[in-house]
Amino acid sequence: MAAVESVTPLFRTGDRVAVRAAYPIGHVRTPYYIRGKRGVIERLCGAYGNPEELAYARPGLPKQPLYRVRFLQREVWPAYDGSPGDTVDVEIFQHWLERG
Image (cartoon, rainbow, N blue to C red; front, side):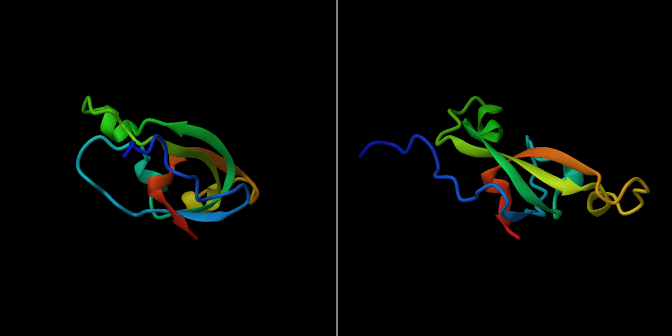
């Protein structure tokens, strides 16, 4: 049986998602400050080798969908005093996202 080359994307533009609030030891590409936060899928960027596996010289397969997720800054940083509509976009791999 052939290996799966890439994981099927689960999310579409406009879907609400939550970033997993996980804190594993090791090489992690999801910023600490964004874990546990909710946002909206802005776009699917493509599928790429899992950088958390590639960092340890493993093949990083199957490739993981990478999304650009948009967050309201006031939801990321509660003390943010800029415009209520200000956003921050973060690229996050699918295995860090849940429906939200």
